[in-house]
Length: 268
Length: 286
Image 1 (tube, each protein chain N blue to C red):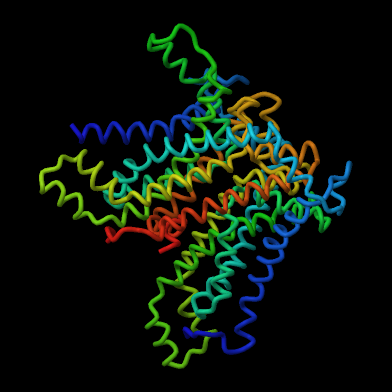
Image 2 (cartoon, rainbow over the protein chains, first blue to last red; image 1 turned 45 degrees about the vertical axis):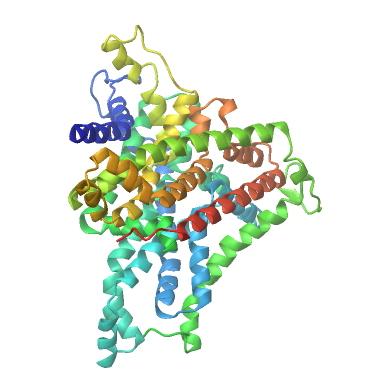
C-alpha cells in the first residue's frame, strides 16, 4: 500500500515538473503560427527562425557574451578568495567570504536596485560592461562555494609531502592544488553560466533598454502576443540547462555540491 | 602551507583583487542605494542630493500596505505548500540509490535555473485555452469546452510553487541525507508502521530544519518579480514588482530605494532568524 502511494506521489511530482515543459515542447512544433497542443502539423521552422532572425540572434549573442564573460570574472574573483581562505585562517578572509555569498541571500530586486543606483552614479548605466560586472558579483557565490569545497577536499598530507620534497608555494599550487580543484572550478563556472543566461531583473535594471538579453527579449515579445518562437527559445534554454547539469551530474559530485550550495549547511 | 597569517606582502596581494571587487561593486552600490533612499527624485534624471526622510514616510500608504500584505500572504502560502510536498519528496529521494538521486537532482537544478520569464510563459501555455490542461479534461469528458485559467490567483500559485519547489528540495536535501537511517529502522522494529514512523520520528527530528526551510522558501518567493506580472492580475503584484515599477516606469529611484531598504531589513531579519534556528539543531544527525 505505502509502496504504491510512494510511486504515485513521485509520479505526481514528476508530472508537475515536466508537464509545462512537455506542453511548450509540443507548441514549439506547430506548423502554423498558432499555439495548439497537441501541435497541428510538425515542423522545426520555429527553431530555424530562432537562429536565423536578426531580432532573436542579437539577444542570443548578448546573452552568450554576458554569460561567458561574467562567469569568467566571477571565477577570477572566487579562485583567489577561496585559495586565501583555505591557506590562511584570518578573520577578514571569512568576512569577505560572507560578503561573497550575501548577494544570493537577498531578494534579487534589492541587489538589482543597488547596481542600478551604482551604475547611474558612475555613469555606465545602459552599458553591457555594467551588466557583465553586475552578473559577476551577483553570481560569485556559486564558484566561491564550489571552489571552497574543492579546497576542503585536498588532503593536507599531499601538500606537506610536496613541500618536504622541495616545492615552493607556486609549485604546490600548480602541481597539486590546481589539478585537484579544477573540476570544482568547471562546476562553478557552469552554474554561473546557466544562471547568468537566465537572469532577468539585474540585466533589465542595469541596461535593459539598450542591451537586450534573451530573457528580456522573451518578456518584451510576450507583450505583443505569444508566438511559437517563444516556445522554441524556451526549449533551447531547457535543453541547455539539462545538458550542462546532466554533465555535472555525470562527471561531478552533484549530491555533494548540492550540500554545499544550500545555505542551511553553511551554519554547520 | 597552512598558516595563521599571510607572511609576506606578496601573499596579501592575492586577496587584494577579490576584496577590491567585492567592496567596490557590492558594498558601495548598497551604500549608494541607502544614500539615494534619503534623496529626492529629479524629473528626467536620477536623483538630486537633498536630504529628507520623505521617501520613508511615503511607505505608509494604503497601496504599499496592500501590496506588502499580499506579497507576504502569497509567499507564506507557497512556502507552506512547497514544504508540505517537498519534505516527504526529499525524504524519498535521499533513500534512493545514488544514481536515481543524481537524476532527480539534475531535473530539479535544471528547473530551478530556468528564467522566471520562461517558467511564467510555460505555465501560461499549460493553463491556456488552446494548449492547456482544460483540453485534456474536455477530451476525458469532465468539461464541456476548454477555458483559460491564466492569469489568476491559482495560475500565480502554480508558477511560484514551480520555482520554489526545487529550491525547497535542495534546501532540505542536506539535512535529510544526514539523517541517521537507524532512526526509522528502530521505530519500525518497535512496531510503528511506515507512515507513523514518517510523521513522528522523521518529521519530529527534523523540526528545526523544517522551520528554517519554511522561512528560506518564504524569503525566496518574496523575491519573485516576473511571475506575478505574467501569471497574476494587477491586484496580485508583489513588492518586487512595485519596486521595479517605481524605479523604471515612474523613474522615482529614491522612493524605490527606500522600499528596497525596507525590504532588505525584512529579508535580513528572516535570514538571521533562519541562522538562529539552524544553531539549535538536535543531535539526531549522522
